[in-house]
Length: 392
Image 1 (cartoon, helix red, strand yellow):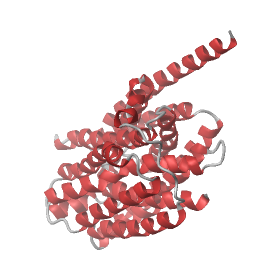
Image 2 (spheres, rainbow, N blue to C red; image 1 turned 60 degrees about the vertical axis):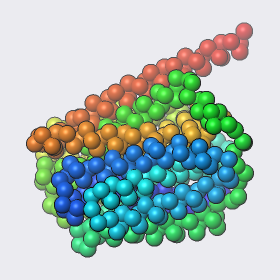
Image 3 (tube, one colour; image 1 turned 30 degrees about the horizontal axis):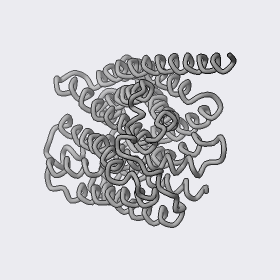
Image 4 (cartoon, rainbow, N blue to C red; image 1 turned 135 degrees about the horizontal axis):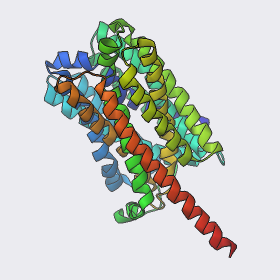
């Protein structure tokens, strides 16, 4: 059982490198394609849009396949996208490669969450999902700093080649360690989307999108912020990425642990509120290097503290459409990434300071926190109403 969860985490490790390393090597990729920094930010958005298209596409095509088969097919698509990025000769080919790389991302998390919850011990579902997500946090702890180093010293293309090779390793481990689980009960396509008739899933999607969008308004441009505003030398960026990755690991652990102890909705709301406060402080305090680095750790920790709770919440609120529900979290995450990278780039294009990305991000996070407050209010009220009816 544990081995199966670790195999799933190998996949999220590769996805984490493919998604997050772009932020740390953005100037190198921009130079390689001879484009501006803001245009290079569109490569982040292309990956995110691939996630948004890929999640429902997999549900349409493969919803009745065995779960392990779906995972293996998604890893194969991941390998293809990263190989294409490695050999991209221009900006437009890079956009296409990033889009393809993003296609399996959301569906992998959706299917992986179902597999993880089935492998979990009783009462440990959120922790099991957090174990799967752990691969992405470890990617930020080790993979992204190494990728940043490779991008500076050798070539950014080697980063995506390494991601493709890791995809091959993941394929082997999933085939060996993840048990053959039956497919989800056969269902018509519209049944996979029936859960969207309720307001709660839409609120979860909106809160996830806004919170992640807020983080990525700022994090997409973390390299120029830390070097140009906070005053860190370029050579220190791998160490800063290591700190950010460590914070993500801690945040992911706390999000899963606290959600098993309290409620996922309360944990997600609290962490997103803390993200709002931290981004607002970055806007004012970014010129102070130590404080900026500390707030970076808080923000990246919050970013992953909400991941497992939100993943589990949408599974809970998607009866009969679990695959789509699980994928919806990553769809919302990455739609937020795309919006964040775009809106964060607007002040840079206008010649404003990079610290303005954090101010725009704080507005996004504030809206997301408000939606979570409304979600928890409605959820608690519904539970009390059901309890009252049960006592009659």
